[in-house]
Amino acid sequence: SLADNDDDGFRINAATPSKAWSRLSRNVIVGPNNEIRTKHDVKLKAQSNATRLLGAHANGCRKGGRDVDGPIGISDQAYNSLKQNIKKRGTVKGVERHGHGKAENYGGGKTRGGAMDGNVRLVVTRAINAGLIDGCNGVVKEGKEAIVYHANAGKGILDEKGSVVGGSDGMDVAVKVFKRIQEFRGRRAYVDGDPRYYSTKFKNVDPRKQVELWTEKEYRNLIRANKAGVPVPSPLMQKENVLFMRFLGEEGWPSPQLREVDMRKGSKKWTTLYEQVMVAVRRLYHCARLVHGDLSEYNILLCPSRLIENHGIWERKGERESGDDDLEIVLIDLGQAVERQHPSSEELLVRDLAMVREFFIKQGIHVLNEKDALDFVTAPCEYGKNGEDLEAAEDSENGDIECATIGDRNKDASAHECHNDDFADDGAGDDQSVWRFTIPGWDDAADLERLKGRLKATEVAK
Image (tube, rainbow, N blue to C red; front, side, top):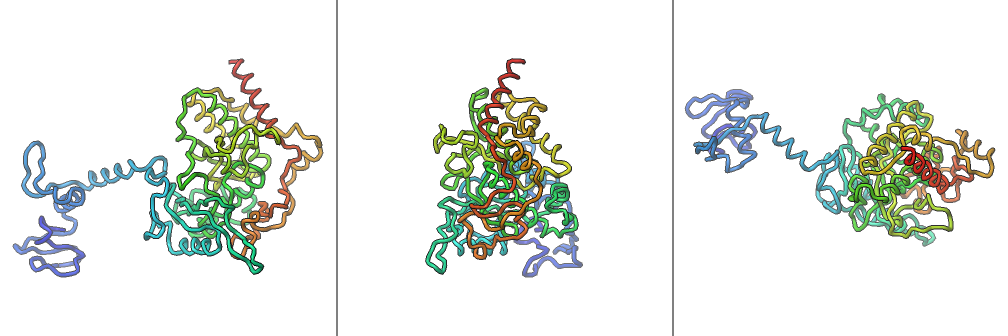
């Protein structure tokens, strides 16, 4: 409103004309007493800001210890600053605090950031029709680039022979929707240097396709890591800017990030978690031939082992000591993960290890220094029975694998619309396929023992 009172005032975009005010031009109006005002009037703009923030309380407020007649004014600078502060109170490092658990109803209109637009709804609906999920619930996590929804486990559908196909193996599903925003322009370095995208220049791709390319890249990285035995969310399907994967949490509540874990500083449990992270990073580097690229306490979850497909990798087969409810780490957000051949892979690995080291030092435990940590991750496999096989597996850059969807969950590729010939290089094969970077004799338990020994030795030397 441009006047002191909404009833007697004038709205620039009003549906019905004012009897007391008339318009001279697009931005200029004349009042009943030949008073000329514009929509850029500083005094009225300040009054409008106050009314937006305080409503009816904008009239008759106290200022400087005395009553003020008429509405008070709030400058644009103060108004915008207050709005930003209110917004920041609900956000921590790009994650909405209110975005935990089944907080929203999927059926209720457009979602924050425009993520759940018509195309996304169509993809989700098709996933429901294909039996991959049984329904989409609320937002469990929100960052500046993506929103993650919780979905009920799908029961699959009947094929022509009457057999059940698809589904999510009885596990709930996380539906990650990447927002169509401009932030993906800054991800060029993670794509252009990746040999899997040697023919694609990220800057030459239109913004819409950039988001879809990034979504596909995370899906491909998850396939690689999952096939290589790394503890990551099991990938189920990818279509456009939507990624379906196993939900890591219970009753719609997500498992906590490492930064959210509340334990006594110096606890031995922190040391156990540090060892798990280091062994997982080493397996990711050698067996999946990937470097995470953005590893920190924000991208590591702590989950019950029964929810993790590749759980207990650091335990010797037949000697499992932990139970299904024991907590283990899971690496997430692999969109920026790069091939070992990427020109910046070593730099990114060093940065990952530095972030991990910094976090666990704050938890009051002893960790490896930068050089020892890098040596542990990159050291070649030395415990195998066949040295020639190990060397061949480590050096192999070529090899084909039959392309299919992930396991028995997605045998019906046409129904789930996730089959892509490009995924052949990432091992999107069935359960009988052999991951082409499999290293014979690989032993995470041996790596864990070696890590423990190194930690003990360096602690004694301090």
